[in-house]
Length: 303
Ligand code: NCD
Image (cartoon, rainbow, N blue to C red; front, side, top):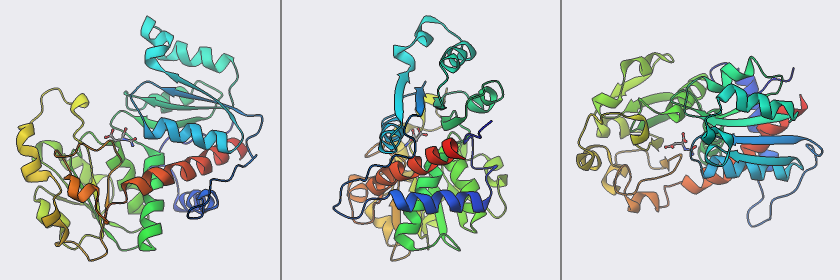
């Protein structure tokens, strides 16, 4: 059975290096159109999204098509999930049509891992609950390397709703495998101590200035209100304490880059001045998402 991509935690550094290296072949040269490839011609991929998505779903679609694959996109609201069908039944139904791979996003942590034990189809995790978002961490690593030349010995501050962030978890696993110094920062109610134990030498702080001082990379996160039953802080105060503003930038290294997986909430976790500034690589992340997902799909379907 071909292996899918379920998480970053279980990948080795050489496996990550291989995906990053292949994605370079898929990045278009500046001002040149994307090239089309044929490596997945004749293969069928099902994109199954049980949660909202703009960037991830579209970039998986574009990635599959640029490799010549056929892709079918299914969203929960337009499928029989809205008629009460269980996850296992939905997946078995799709599995019976023999797709070559399933890309899935689900609100339950571990859903893709669970299904991969039952279905003979490789599954690519496009985000599972608060657990992992492996292709996001890969595209983030590619973006950092493109801008700063290396991952080794960088200081990366991840700021915001750490508790509910699958992006933070996947990045912690990936960056730690490359010797990055990771600093996690957010309100105490969104900064569980356990997150500091996911990898060695993770620093935790509730002080945003301390997190940013000497940082090479600032990665901002959205507050995941949809995953919180009772927000532990007043939302209108959030920006005052944890919103990234121009005055923060001087505390960091001169070649600082500002990242955000999107969707951004302007005026909540990031000011427009910073989001639209020269420091921001938010749209480079989106662009790199296509190249990374091409590399991942090709690997999953051809190895
Ligand atoms: C993130 C996600 O869905 O986990 N977005 C994304 O995939 N680019 C982050 C978020 O929703 O805040």
